[in-house]
Length: 284
Length: 242
Image (cartoon, rainbow over all chains, first blue to last red; front, side, top):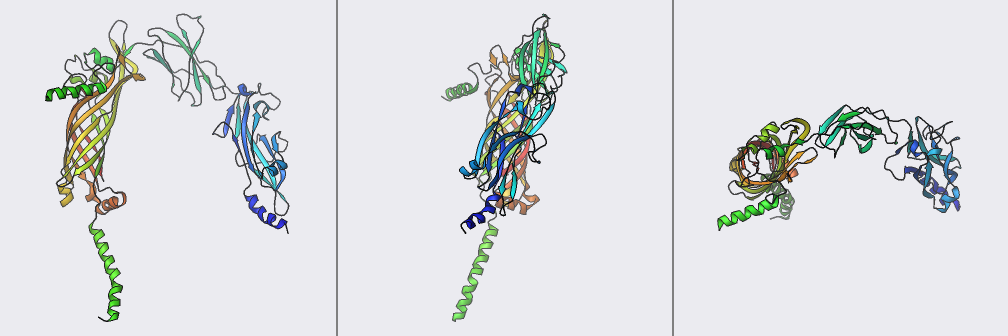
């Protein structure tokens, strides 16, 4: 009879069982890594509510085929024992480090030598006792994915070089998750080494290199880097020469415009004060 | 009076009282009017090239025509006895871009790929009078109005990604002036009076208007010289009185 309240509570407890997995330092559920990250460890948070009716430990593993199937012979990343659940009132949470180089996706190859793209899902499950003694498997409700990308992005193509004032704008169509690096050298010194002058996340339009000298011919090439830090082959080398330009303000001043702009005392709030003083003097 | 008659009167009283209150609600159809909100668009062509002493036409040479100016204006009404008078403040934004000119080594210029432009943020402090007697008393949907007030226009002249600088002078500042506006608005209530009443009872918006107005603005720091941001032009928009 003492077990009766416990047995009555069991179904309610079973309904609240859950496991969640998430990357510790990202809001997304996908992490892209590459060969540069073979030694890296990715922190993954787990939180599990099993109640006190656990009949098999919680296991966390990585699976190439998603988390639908059972673990099988996939290598175990971590486990939480029944006693740990019992000593924490049926709820456990923590963080485990997933070693990128040990992910089960490289087959006969190694992480550093792997030259393809593959992905694994991080999965977790435990089994709890049902009312009549059967063990029911509970799977994680979230499925973080690690994408291992060893493929370099396509070689960028510089469609055009636009000469600007002390700058050159390179039109380079690329994907939005690619960063561009620009290598620069003086065109009149062919043996001069490349200098990396810019890296930027682009929106598919290209990149602008600033702080250049007008009327000097430069050689430029562009290198793309994707989110897995894979680097493309350099683009073809192009040449460009920044030029001095004059905008509307310069045209206005050249035409004899008397506006002095913000640097002088006759502008902005100072102008307002001067005008008020002028009107005051006229009245008095 | 017999007791049963008292009973009948007492029983009918709430019904009669209820009918009266319904009648009163039907008569009082409009909520108090206090404010006006306007959203307007128009082509704004600053008379920059009209500045005394200019030897050329830099605005016409760089840009092609006027720019689209969007403004929002709020008014607070303080007089409603014969027409409606209010004070208002508006703020708008417009920009226009063209091609900067490449400075050739041997002198002279030619069009370049670099963009140059002007951005303005006109702000106006206005006194407004709307002759809405006909609309309020007789249901005539046309409401003529006039506005007059002070104007301040901060401006930025940009080249590439920033404000252009020539000889240490930055191409930005603010210009002041005054303006007068005349316009006419079409009160939309006549299209569907029931919907207009629901708009008032539900959202507190008494009247909606479509309007057209013409503004004459002298924005040249009251004739003291410098950049001329005066303009003459028409605006069209939607007004909500609440």
